[in-house]
Length: 341
Image 1: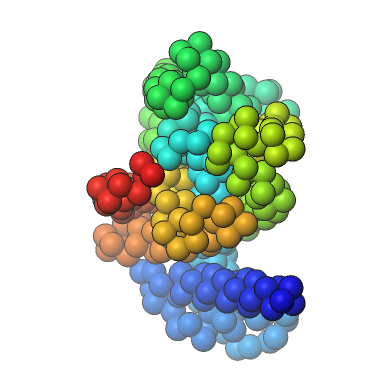
Image 2: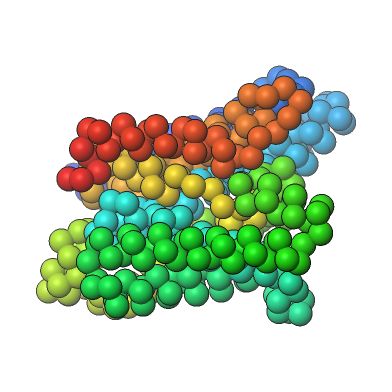
């Protein structure tokens, strides 16, 4: 029986990896210049295994240096944000919890912009560290405000809205006061979610953070199941509530901060994707977390492809695409009452 369960899980994991790999290859083939899928596969084989396939140098450069790295970052970002949303919804027992609503994304944006424009840190740390510090400060602010307001779910949501508005205002103030016109344009475009400038160094940061975040969250899957019934119930089941809370909030803030520092603030992924995953597997986090990560990765890769082809000759911010898709999807979920159950 155990071997059968293990076999099914292995098969499911393999199928998920194949599906994700195909989506990355498809994303690398689609763009203003269409490239055959075989050329994409040959290019990947050349760089990963040294296969020596004959590939046009221009096509190879487009695939490897631009599209594939961009697709890997998009997949990592989608998976990380979806994981963060699923974890926060379980810990806070609130269906509306996500990194964006609770101010984590806004705080990360403020931290990243403070480093990039104001030079906070004097070059000692980069945008990723600044974004992480900003996300932690924002969540601490929201938590303290919620505690003062009464600890209920309504208080958490209202405190998150207040925190997000505050840090968004701080970000706008920094950009308006200290950035040049060119810097302001670039930062505002980046804040809407921008994958245009990402390359392999960004992927080498985003992918390990996502993998580590997934493993940490899966390690605490049973604890998250216990949190579904409340912190007191989790404590009665032997869950070290405070330690688990700190670890999972920390890893959620870390994933969000790193992704925001690379691609900017992308809404709706952490809110909608976990609810979509629950349609298929319910609330068991051992299944919910990896499925959320997979759907989030596929969704953002698809959104990135759409952002590159929907307007000929122009690339839209990916946050625009996720909002255009995510808002109606969330409204549909809300109308069916699944968010409130």
